[in-house]
Image 1 (tube, helix red, strand yellow):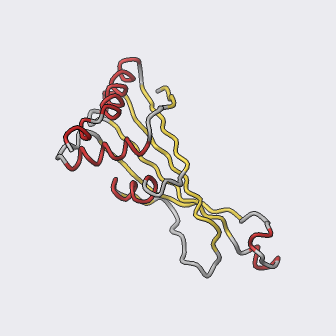
Image 2 (cartoon, rainbow, N blue to C red):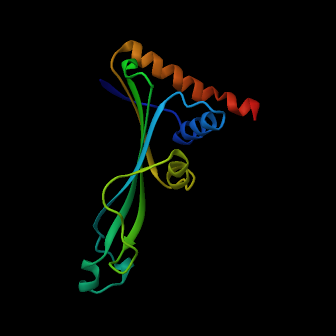
Length: 152
């Protein structure tokens, strides 16, 4: 499988998929998930904490994954979106951050990663061969054309 960048707005992809679902079309396998990563917060004066408190502060990032694939595995392509949303510093007293990956639905993915318009987004296609890439490009053209806008 060869990966390649896709130049289509992630919001347009998700909104198109949601419109397809509303119309009763679920022609693709969709997997969405959310996870969190945390690392020690940078040592900056912005936090105005002492050394001991600073050690307990973590910088938390929400990470969203969305994978779209054809129902037939033999079609040989996958479209992936990855979102990273820096949520900011957290202390041990804050609500705990779940560990591990959690499956979410498409509407939740849109609500948490697309609508806030603050996440860094990457879109990538993966195709087994030239025919699979053409099939994926047909989907991307349908998304860009977006017949839903004309009917709604």
